[in-house]
Amino acid sequence: MSIVPVILSGGAGTRLWPVSREGHPKPFMRMPDGQSLLSKTYRRAAALLGEAGEIITVTNREHYFASKDHLAEARLPNGIQGHFMLEPQGRNTAAAIAHAALMVAERHGEDCVLVVMAADHLIRDERAFIASTEHAQRLARDGYLVTYGIPPSAPETGFGYIERGTPLDDQGACAVARFVEKPDLATAAEYLQSGRFLWNSGMFCFTAGTVLRELREHVPEIVTLAEDCLANSPAHDSAGVLLQELQACSFLKLPDISIDYALMERSSRVAMVPASFDWSDIGSWSALSQLVEADTANNRVQGDALLVDTRNTFVMGESRLIATVGVDDLIVVETADAVLVAHADRAQDVREVAKRLKQENHDAYRLHRTVARPWGSYTILEEGPRFKIKRIVVKPGASLSLQMHHHRSEHWIVVQGMAQVVNGGVEPRLVNTNESTFIPAGHKHRLKNPGVLDLVMIEVQSGEYLGEDDIVRFDDQYGRVC
Image 1 (cartoon, rainbow, N blue to C red):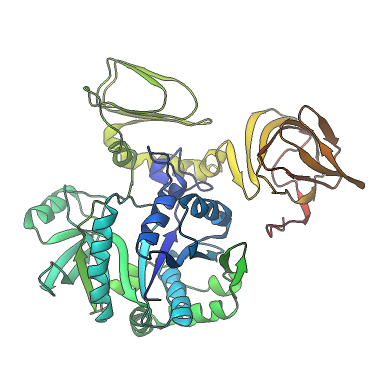
Image 2 (cartoon, rainbow, N blue to C red; image 1 turned 60 degrees about the horizontal axis):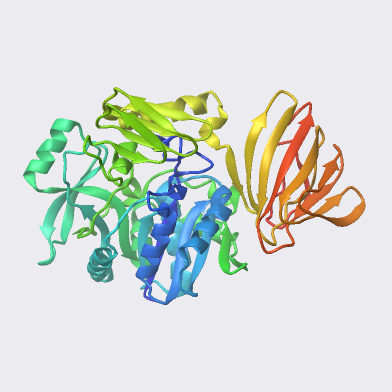
């Protein structure tokens, strides 16, 4: 195998709150065309492979099942296998790339090329992306660590920059003179005017052997610790994908450092290929709004909205009508449980909202009202001091864990499909549409969808404590233990 795409999927995308949250980060966000950024990235990676190959996804264990769903949604050729490397906790890009490179070297040899991609970037010109990657591969096979530089279109202060060095070919590739941190506006304007600087995309191309040799020279402890971790983290086939859970006690010894700091800024073998494709990191609501067509007043709307005497405003709604009257230069984003209203010039500062919510341990930092689970999803419809009402959707053939709650009872009403229910010591029984069952506190119970369509039911919880942590699992097909 000559090439393996490696997709790094981490980070909370806090500038895109309230849609992007810790439990539902930016890669899972839907673009205006209905596709998620992660699914688009899988399709782009597959375009480099053709009909067969392997795509490695490095992500947090908590995001595995959702990531696998987005891989399935991408509908890749049957010959392309997904390989998930699951981190117990984020350790930045150097650790992720070191583990992926070691695994690729072991499975495919040190001459195999890694194309490292972020899960949350948007690139629409797939043909141009393939052409740039073919250019990068030629340099990678010559022993370079290749980064993709994005020709700047504005004095952007939200990106790092790369300064051009010595030309390496007649197609625009060059050595990297230096990497520069995010500049202030005046400096960014100077960079744009000079023509010597490109935006740092955070995408890379190199052979497994080259990146491992360079890591061993500049940060040998990362490779040593990653080797130890992989030795204790065997990969195995799991329902059609290769699954590898990185051992926590070994993995957490690795330093938290980016590949830029650990290697790219230190190595003398770094080259840059100027991207010939369109690119956006969708880093703010302003960036995402540009994907929506503007009206004559430069308003952009996604969802159900009525705008009166409104200009230069972006409105995105998920669950209800949004009306604006006599306003200019706003960002308005609505979800089922939160609304963001911000001045258009302060799009980068939305992260401060997420930061405050996290400091206050507010649920709106972590989760939406609808929460994805390996078996389907649940939506909180209403809750009070001693009750909570959920809408539960279970995928065909899926099953919740065999579990028990100490502090709450549950009443299940099936509104679509058929449920197979275990309740206490009684044999499993079928509960049909418009039928119900009651689960007393302390009873072991399990819910399964034996049908071929989604099972939908309403769950009414009652008790002194209704937290999601009031659960004891006895058996779970998804490997959850608490």
